[in-house]
Image (cartoon, rainbow, N blue to C red; front, side, top):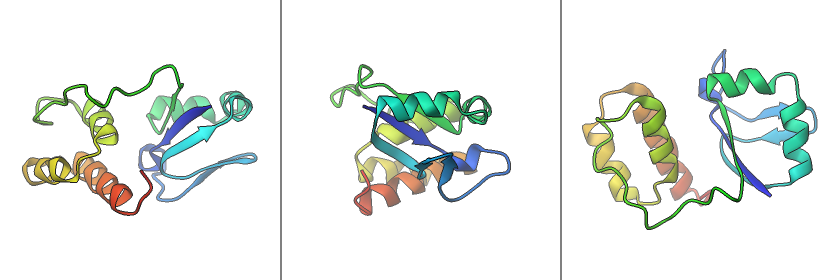
Length: 125
């Protein structure tokens, strides 16, 4: 089982909703517990390499588990956009996200923070 992170706003043209790869439908954000067969079908899909180059899709294998006690950077300003988005995706603390939001000027990072806050409040994470 793997987790697939979909960032449809990074695809071209940017999207807002789910993306379908034949019979596999991925919703924006974290798609949990995707079977190994489904991951292999996704990797063999002709559109997958382009989505991966854009950074719109990321597959996290169960071996690469996130350590919740790992320290998180106090400021996103020192990171590039891709690094900041990964930190945001793994942050479970709404107060920390809102603190980053007040100090962040990059539109892409602000959108990522808002999406993460919405996902946590909506119970999707």
